[in-house]
Image 1 (tube, rainbow, N blue to C red):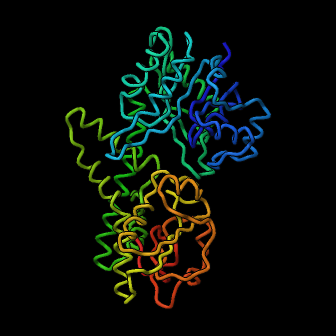
Image 2: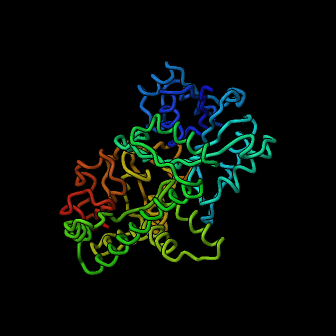
Image 3: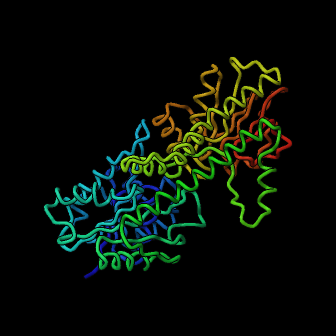
Length: 420
């Protein structure tokens, strides 16, 4: 039987994967947002994860996107790649997964496979998603249709470690399904695949990847706070320590985005359901979630030390996205710096050449500009290490007495007053 693939959810994860699948299989991308679909079919990806050239080539070769559910009924290999956020209380929000599972249930047929890529805690695929597919379709799991889990490993903005160049974990609801899922992925993933023994193992492997990074970054963030009190430059310490072959070179900073800043909450929620309180995981989250406010406090302290009037002062925030060279503003922690500074009644200008001003306004209620301002400021905070900021003459933005704070440690340290 010919493999016909449908990827549901055409965001940072789904679109690159769908484009890659289309090089070997008949593939259609499905997204609920008709504007997103129209833009993609016009040959442009606003997330910039797939270049216009690659996307347009894929379309010429038969790849298409749709928001019409009837257009995906003849597929037999469904891949779900929708977001898995947390709510305001940092509890997992599975609403997008439920919706995608219902969509699958409306079109899935006997013998079909549905593979989930969204990051979840162990058991979500079988305990939460599959029952929705069963209820909607009227089919019986592992008799009429089958499932797999292959966690996404997309690194937004990274043009080197693209989807085909990152080893992929695969799994299936039965041994035969696992082999089939692995065959499909391994046929397009040049870095290879790892077939996990169960879907729960694959789910657990994904959720600990980012939890591990979160905890390590929390450790160096705490070191930064300690060394700052001692008058020691944290980056100098890390550079010296990195001369040991097995030292892990994590850097202090803001931890946002849709993965590292979110996934640990999924693992913590799961642990608590089993009666275990994950102390280290949650302590790391508290540390990292507080870094935006910490940066704002340090900037105000430096201004006071320089005798700069804080009330009514003008502050320039360079960068708003959650990471460098990427337009993604989901769960950006720069907003925490902004909100903390705003409590001091400061005038804050945000400049980011990558972020979409309309998205930032809609999601966070802030105004940003894509160009650099011509005015001078009492303080400049380099929050995101975009390439456009690395060679900037920071002095052009400074009043005669001003503060420069480097969150990412990418500016010449002789030109800054403080950094993490």
